[in-house]
Length: 197
Image (cartoon, rainbow, N blue to C red):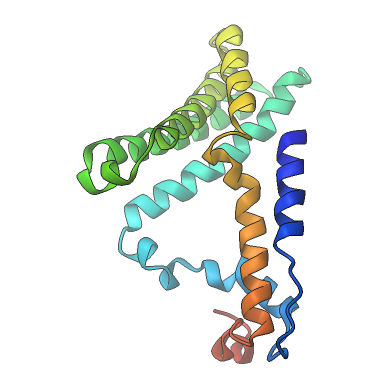
């Protein structure tokens, strides 16, 4: 976590050069737009042309957030209740299957395989296994050793590989919004007038 915090601080500081051009817009509305309307899948060609993969990605990321939250619950020894545990385990099974599906697509599609490096496969595999093992832990599978090994490997790998995008994403959107907001490009006029985009 300290490594991630250091990287985030370094990125934010290095991305704040003095802009001597005359401002044509405001940055705060642009930052709001960057985290909301600009993320609309209809506006993103990579999303609206590949809806199944996009939906799988959303499920996969939601499963990641869920697994992280449950890790702290498991670590603290808090009981979730039998019904809740099985519902959560089912959700994590679904999200891990989405992750493995995305991994399989990367492996079998020549265009994706050509663009991929080892880090892409390792990151996807680690997070998918983390979700799956979290679900199995909730279901009482008795895989404590394997679970904590996966978590440990994931924590070590987190600040080193592409999983850093959990913090880099927000820093990148912030800097992009400041740049386009200063120039009056974001939010688009239609979004500013209607209040949604």
